[in-house]
Length: 141
Image (cartoon, rainbow, N blue to C red; front, side, top):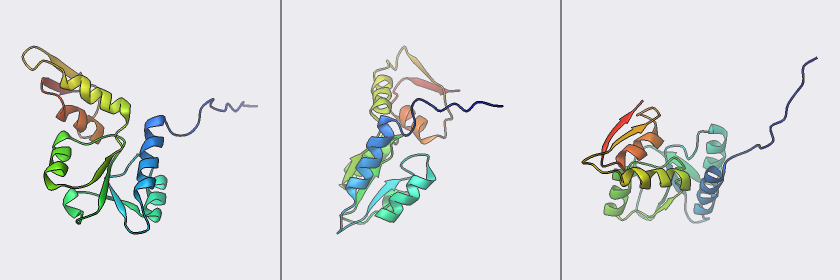
């Protein structure tokens, strides 16, 4: 007979819970809100948020005046934040605080002497966000 082990901890991490809450709170009876890509890597939850009025979009140019964007828990490239600011688009930053900490760490790397190595897929949104905050030479593997 095989034993079944139940994990001590189940559910979402703090950063994901925070992002979900921000997305849910961004929906009002008067307006919908949007996420740039899926807020997390859980399509069931993305579907539930869509039913509540917070749907994913692929580009910030899809937003209309007065609509709110929620930045996904994995963050976005710095250029996206810059573009949101330049266009005056209201947004809620649901980037996980631990991911944001990595953005701050790589932003402090010295471009004249440091090399930053990032373990991850260079096409992953979280990795792209990290790379975009790095002024030093940066490599993924």
